[in-house]
Amino acid sequence: EVQLVESGGGLVQAGGSLRLSCAASGFTFDDYSIGWFRQAPGKEREGVSCISRSGGTTYYADSVKGRFTISGDNAKNTMYLQMNSLKLEDTAVYYCAAARFLSSTVWGRAWEYDYWGQGTQVTVSS
Figure 1 (cartoon, helix red, strand yellow):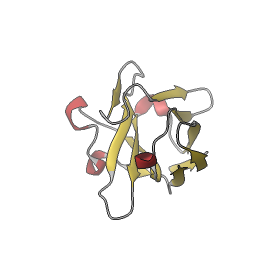
Figure 2 (spheres, rainbow, N blue to C red):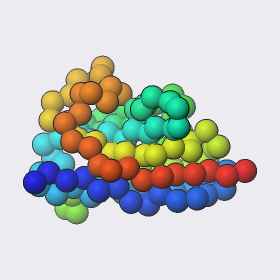
Figure 3 (spheres, helix red, strand yellow):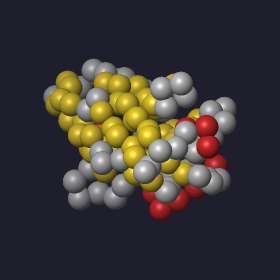
Figure 4 (cartoon, one colour):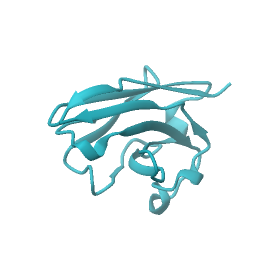
């Protein structure tokens, strides 16, 4: 059974940092592109970052470039999203997702992904 489990969310002050984790079971990260998405109340789910199957290419939404970093540990089958300099507008539920086949031009489209985690809440306070 394929499963993705996010962790690491919480409450942080603006300017602070959090590291989200996405642990996978039932498949190996080597075979999938892994994306991070977020959804704030009343808003659509948006792509935050993605790392290609090979791990050689990463993508970021303009709103998080320079602040967020995606990385992975294939030995642990775990993906991470390091979030620095957090802003109020980063408050959302964050999801990780896996896509077996993903073109670089569509990495931010939620419907391109095959598997999803349950999400973890990130709240940034002033």
